[in-house]
Image 1 (cartoon, rainbow, N blue to C red):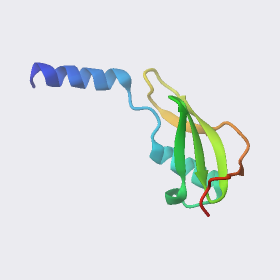
Image 2: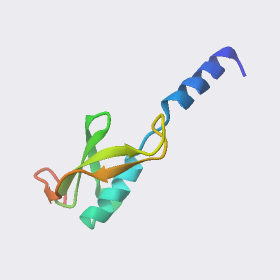
Image 3: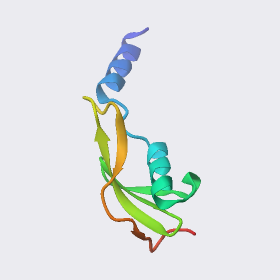
Length: 88
């Protein structure tokens, strides 16, 4: 492994991966009683998303159990409300 590859690997390990959009879609699908493929998300900040789908929307925050964004998932952080821009 070259010097550059080692640096890239170290940076990736230090940053961690955090919660994924896929996880958010699956979490919101359960909360919205909707197919995960119909859920979209927009970023409010690095740890907050608004999920929209099936005529509903809600705010989710990233929650991590470990250091460096390890063991992360999305947690509902608002009421589920009718979404003005949501697709049916």
